[in-house]
Amino acid sequence: MDKFLKLNPDKKERILEAAYNEFSINTYENASTNRIVKEAGIGKGMLFFYFNSKKDLNIYLVEEGVEYIKKEYVDKIDENETDFLEKWKSLSRIKFEAYKKRPYIINFMANVYLNNDMEELPADLKSRIKEITGLGYAKLFKNLDTSLFRSDLSEEKVMRYIKLMMAGYEMELVERLKGVNFHEMDVEPLWDEFYEYIDDLKTIFYK
Image (tube, rainbow, N blue to C red; front, side):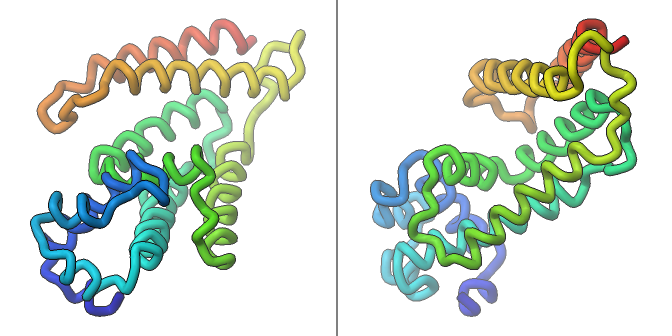
């Protein structure tokens, strides 16, 4: 792995992007190193010069993915924000910026979670994933002012309803934006729509 870290940054990023893309659209078993080297424009021998096996490559991708999510998402969560929906608004901006920088990492990590593609991972890396996931949830729910919620529903129900509705909204948005190049798109109208949605949720679930 040390040899890979010393590689020319542009070539390194090209290999990583090809590998992340391949593993994000396929399960671990179905991912093909042949397709990775073709997409990256390198020889197969070069890939295995840096990584001993497909398993080693996958482990490296997960390790880098976990640290990217921690640095670009979890570490940036504002624990001092007490308004649940305002915190979610801020988180969405953070998540989008992380996705815009390196979308293939976010797609890959989503695939790891959704398909439970962690069987090949060492125990310490599985623990690291759980640790970062737990930290993110802890920061999301820390210091919330639940007195803002309507009083005829329990706090747990309000937060559950909001999470379900936000998840549905995000899934719909992902479908609408498939294939979009965010670097060439004016995304501010999307944020205006999102903030309006947040305000609607406040009308429904806040006092």
